[in-house]
Image 1 (cartoon, one colour):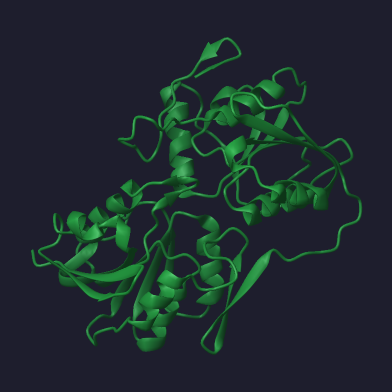
Image 2 (tube, rainbow, N blue to C red):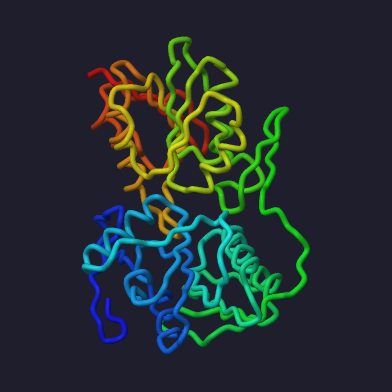
Length: 361
């Protein structure tokens, strides 16, 4: 990638075998071009998924708001690749920021997460605060503008460049009604909570519903791992079925982990924000449960799920079970038979199937 007369080497993390996928987009380049001549020394970065902005703006005082563990790994990888300092000032979307002069946002797929970013910026804004948001035109939604207008008086669009465009936000609104960016979800006789941006806002998604309707623990399944745990609803149901179970929840998204901490408060649970299972003990779990992801922002990509499956096989005890729900079109069984000696479909409807894998070796 070339920027400001310099060339940067950028690689995606997790690694992909799809050669059409790059570690940057034209939206990110357009944002960079728009701020090239700014005198502002402090910049806050949002949704810098692979570290393109961290690399190109390394000479400024940068604060990076991270949302994914894999994002932190990608940023470090690309800073190292370009022989730049890997010391990054990280904040989460729930942290208070110091004064924000200039913020750069690659607008995420989740409009809710975009709003969470804007609320965080607004709390630390002043009259000169400016926010430059980049997006690819094919993903444009009128909701971008509606959300931005809740927080800023001036919301302007740029002309398109290589199928990318900017939203430029100025003049933060002085009076805002306080808004808690948390959703509540009814499940049976309980109410679960999750932060804006976490998967399946406002209701339990139909794949998870089908899974939970058919989930039956065995008496000896006491040590349980929930992979891609989201708001923790599957772990919540596991612990309802067996209060003696010890559950570890793992998710790449920090807001998912923080949501599950709310929902499992006081329970015998551990929480891990990571995109791999490498830090977990090998051969240690009786049961692994999962509704695994197959989206990476706007991309359909099962490579992430396949990497998780390899980690699951390593973490399961011999004779341990891996129980997952999957869309029918993904054909996960073909991949799972390469890892597990026993793979069978327990339940199936028109859209989903529940697959059971047993580790025999």
